[in-house]
Length: 239
Image 1 (cartoon, rainbow, N blue to C red):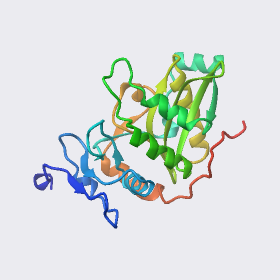
Image 2: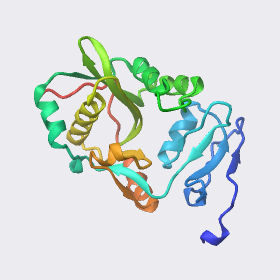
Image 3: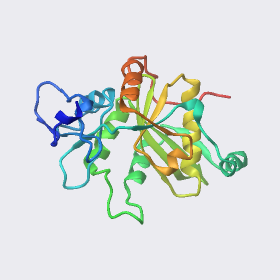
């Protein structure tokens, strides 16, 4: 019952011999979804977290914070929405899109603070951890190229039939949207159930993402993460 929910997150020992996250239903309501503090950013810890619907998100100088918000923003691939203006950009075919061609370049670009931000949540430790995940075949990038340079892109984690989106960046108008559309269309061909977008943003909502209850999300997750994963590196299917 929510009346018995703790008002403080669980502490995770970094040197624990067994990785045990608390039940996501114990996550705080304020701040929404904060579940645990501590632990590690090793590949084993991250995979265990994602399989439970938990992700790390914290800033410089903070301990590792683990989250599972309710509701959860997700995109079902068949519900991808493409606006008229974005459809026009796609028809112009002015970008080249690739998969897993420059993961380190994409995450580095995502880590750079935007002009409207005072800092970034992608700390050097986070960046290194996701590069390790990429090398292990779980983290993937989508690159959008213009005139031979990265114009935008995104990265995330894939386990089974779920793609957990982490961050995106844009240097040229619509570049990240073009990358996202290309990814979602490919994921649909591969039979992925959904793209986890974590928390609501107007940008992702405009592309068709919707909020669903955490229980609905974890029910899908409990089945979908067990499906066979795809090999790495990823490449687009030929049309």
